Length: 454
Ligand code: IFM
Image (cartoon, rainbow, N blue to C red; front, side, top):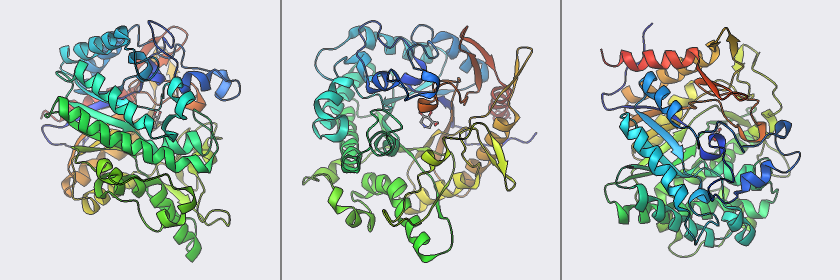
């Protein structure tokens, strides 16, 4: 097999997040987050599942680090649970929580695996939710920066790659507009506030991290999705432009250009948060890299009530398992497999935003695995990875400044509203026993990495 080739100093990693894998939701001083509350609310998660135990990595991370080493991975992206280190989101520190992340980082470094640390992967402290509505109020941006400073003071001597936010669009849209994610609100008046205040928190955190460790590399992770009009009608084309601004350039323009895109911004003026003088400068404070999460593309069409809004996640969560429609493969999330979109997104960032350093912080697919005599076959996931890594390599050849590729995800885990029903891992998890089995796709990744040495 011919494997795509990457630059010498390239990071090959996998990504996870705290709530999706750690478990130990109320142990050793951890405070509740909005995901604890949401998952404990009947009817919110598939089959009533929760992240209470998840993959048990709070108690055993070493097994998974050994697997990473066996696969030859040289980087790992994980997130810190804010309420493990600050149970109330601010104020009293939980030293045991900080100790846990210190042990985790040391264990990674011990195996030569570079840690990429995400500070906010959606698990807002419940206490800040109760007091401020989470990022609905700007105070939370300030508390987020305090939390960032606490974590960097504890780990910044060893962790050199920091990601402030994971996918702020998803947190704001799925959590406050569609209500599918915690905190489960459906309120168009709050959406833009949450988006703006997250970005403010990002800008403040960049400055605080740099003030402690000027050599730290700091970035933000955005999920980027090419948007197409559903038909060639004028109105659908307009819907696609605004939809693209809503999901993509709202965040890209804010952090790179210090402005929100038109016409989206003026069309949503009734919903605007207060943008104070200096906010956009804070949000666009220079940072070191863009984290790109890429999965699929979406189609938008005109609707009279809003000029766009056919939100892909809401439409597709009903998919039971993977399927083929009109010759096109869809994953078990109901997401179209569209590898070309990876190339297009990377080239768009290169051309529109001055060729920044990029790490692909997530790419991967959920499929039904075939478990047979302690082997797990997942040919569709392997194919997905083959196709997408080829597009990444092509974008690099064409000048995109990509220096790392993280697969979502290392181990099967809690996939938010769909619980444990969707499996994205390179490694199969038997949730009853916590046994891990490396899937065929995991071995393919090992061969991809090995092939780079030649
Ligand atoms: O599981 C999520 C992750 O938490 C954020 N990005 C998308 C993944 C797959 O849905």
